Image (cartoon, rainbow, N blue to C red; front, side):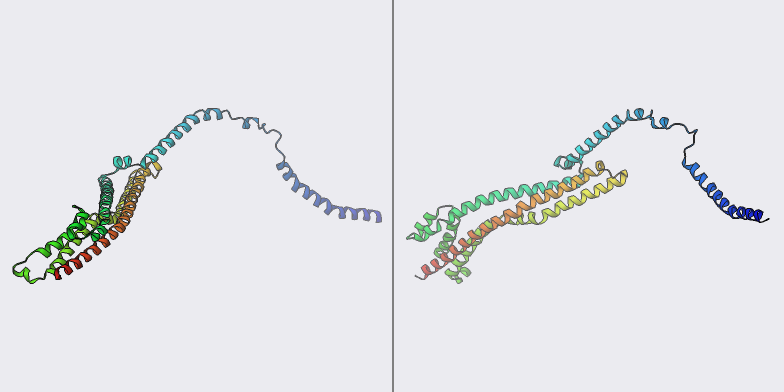
Length: 295
C-alpha cells in the first residue's frame, strides 16, 4: 500500500511538468515551421533572370538622345532669349517701342557728350587768352589778342558798343554805365546758355532711363505670366523668352543711364570753371568801361 501510494504520488508530481513541457513544445513548433522554407518551394533562379531587361534598354537610348536634344534646344533658346535680336523678333509693339526710346536716348547722350566736349575745348582755349587781353595797352589791341570768334570778346565788344552809343527818347534816361552793365550781363548769359546746352537732356536720360528699362522688365514678366497661363506649362522653354526680354530691358536701361550721369557730372564740372572765368571777365570789363566813362 505504501509503495503504491508513493508511486502514485510521483505520477501526480510529474504530470504538471510534462503538461508544461508539452505546451511549450506546441508553441515553438509552429514558429520553427514558419521560419524554415518549405521543402517543395521552387528555386530562386527563375526570379533572378530578367529576360525583359535587354528589350526595355533598347529603346532607352533613343529616348535619352531625344531628351538630350530637347535639352540642348532648350538651352539654345534660353541663350538666344538674352539678346537684342530676340527682343526685337519676339517682343510686341510695347517692347519694341521701349527699346527704340532707349536707343534714341543713348545716341542722344553720346552726341551731346561729344559735341559738348569739343565746345568746352574751344572755350577753354579762348579762356586762356584772357590774361593777354589785360596785358594789352589799348582795348583794340586787347580785342585783337582775344581773336575774332572768341566768346569772351563779345562781352567786351558789347560794353564798348553801349559806351559809344547815343540813346534818344526814354533810353536816354538810362545812364550809360547801367546800359553797359546790362549789356555785359546779356553777353554773360549767352555764354552760360551755350555752356548749358544739352545738359538738361543728359540729366533727363540719367533720371528716367532706369525707369524705362524697369517698365520693359515689368512688361516682359507680364508676358511670361500670360504665356504660362495660356499654355499651362511653366517649363523653361515657355518662360525663357519673356524673362530674357525683361532682363535685357533692365540691362539696357542701366547701360544708357549710367554713362549719361557720368557725362553730366564731368561736363558740369568743366562748365562751372568756364562760367566762373566768364563771370570774372564780365565783372572786370564792367568796371573798366565804367571807369573809362567817368574819365
